[in-house]
Length: 357
Ligand code: IPM
Ligand code: MG
Image (cartoon, rainbow, N blue to C red; front, side, top):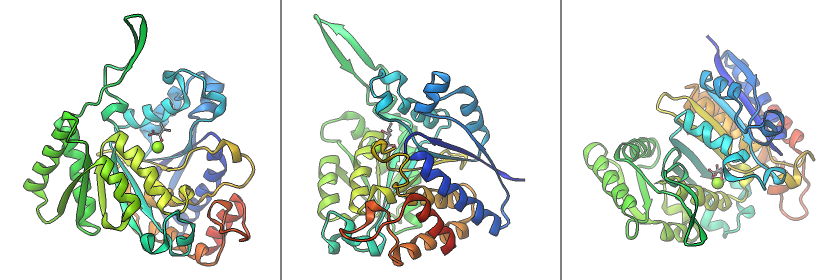
């Protein structure tokens, strides 16, 4: 039986980077004799333009029926003035929630040849390999009540940061399991000195650790300190587990450590193993449609799909090795090129990866 892959290029550079990633996925799967059935759909701004909603019903139905969803990115200036509830981003948030994709894996790995592209000194980031595990279907992103109301003649905006114990337990287990396959260390990031909900977070993470994962080293850090430590000495971390919003922020910081947001893949997993895979970068409207964007984050997201949903770790290794090879050969898109270095376009980078495969 074929595994089902839903391709959602989305907006901006999503369309371009997705084309390269799909070619890579097709080649690697066919070499491995792994049958995949591809379909595509609309999400985000383009879906708003065509269907008046960022997540049309048929896209949601197709996503629910798929094993793997590949997503390029959503949003752009054209839709920036829409109210929060109608924006392209809402399509992505609903997908995460409807598919119960509670575990968001955001690795920050520095490829050796790119050490100079980091904004930190090369010795601070050489061989960096950390994993941010972000809770993705709870917290302040989804908490109720939320809104803007009138109060004493002015408007008051409000959101709710809420976590139930079972939500903390399941993300903690994923963190410890991942750490077991890596370097055995988890740092849980919270704001337990100020927010009750994250005091509960700390307590539950500690309880899960005590009960099931004593072989793993667990530490706790406040989020402000974690932000500081990430730019001061990022290699102290192995797995960082944190809430939805703290993970959103820290994963962008971690991304920059590696020299380019254009390099970072992500996986959003449900308990069933089903996953949505997307680059961490956005839709970069300023360079969209110009064959400039770096497709490697999306290609590396495909590698994660092979590893985490399709149980084909060998295929994932192949893709990651091909990317490493292309970088070692000095092939660069503009975002990862040093000053004066020659650059290639999106398509050429994709072709270079295919050739390396
Ligand atoms: C991300 C993005 C999204 C988020 C936006 C586009 C809704 O920043 O995936 O990190 O905030 O989760
Ligand atoms: Mg973000």
